[in-house]
Amino acid sequence: EPEVTQTPSHQVTQMGQEVILRCVPISNHLYFYWYRQILGQKVEFLVSFYNNEISEKSEIFDDRFSVERPDGSNFTLKIRSTKLEDSAMYFCASSFYNEQFFGPGTRLTVL
Amino acid sequence: TQLLEQSPQFLSIQEGENLTVYCNSSSVFSSLQWYRQEPGEGPVLLVTVVTGGEVKKLKRLTFQFGDARKDSSLHITAAQPGDTGLYLCAGLTTDSWGKFQFGAGTQVVVTP
Image (cartoon, rainbow over all chains, first blue to last red; front, side, top):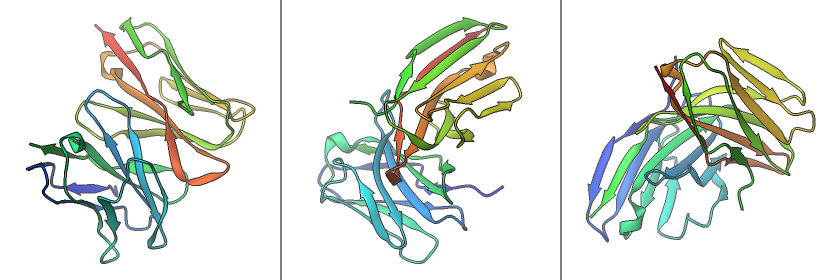
C-alpha cells in the first residue's frame, strides 16, 4: 500500500542552523502539506503546495520557512535560522483530492 | 478561535462501553475526515465523509456527517483497549480547498 515517507525520523540541530526535512509523498497525489505538532498540542497547518507553488500558508510559516519539490518526487521543508520554539514533530502529508495521508513525522529538536 | 471544535477533550472509559466524540463548526465543509493518532506517530486516516447526512461504518466505528455539513460524530461500540488514541477531525471548507482545518482532538483512553 502506498505511503508517505519522511526522513530523518529525528533531527537535532543548534539554534541558528538550517535544517531540511524531507518527504516522499504518494506518487499520484497532487497536493502536498507540512504540519507541525508541538508535544501535547494540536496539529498545526504550515503550508500547502499544489502545481509547484504554495497555495496557502499559515502565520507560522514565516520567511525562515520554505518548501520545494525539486525533482517531482521529493517534497522538502527548509527552516533557516532555527529557534528553540521550532522544536516539534513535523508531518508531511499528501492528498489526491479530499483524503489526506500523513507521513510518520520528523522530530526536530533545536538546542 | 478554532474552526473545528471537538468534544470532549478527554474521555476515559472501561472496555466494552460505548463512546461518542463530536466535531462541530459554524462553517460548511466540503468534506470531513477522522484520524487516529498514537503518541509519536502521524495521524492515520480512518474515514472521509462528503455528503450531508452520510453515515459510514468501519467495524465498531460509526461516523456521521451532519445534514448541513457543519458537524460530525464518531461513535465507538464496545470499545477495546486498542481503540485508545487521539481522535482528530479535519475538514476542507467550501472556500479553502488548499487547507485542511484540524480540531484539537479528543484523547480516548480505554482501560481493560
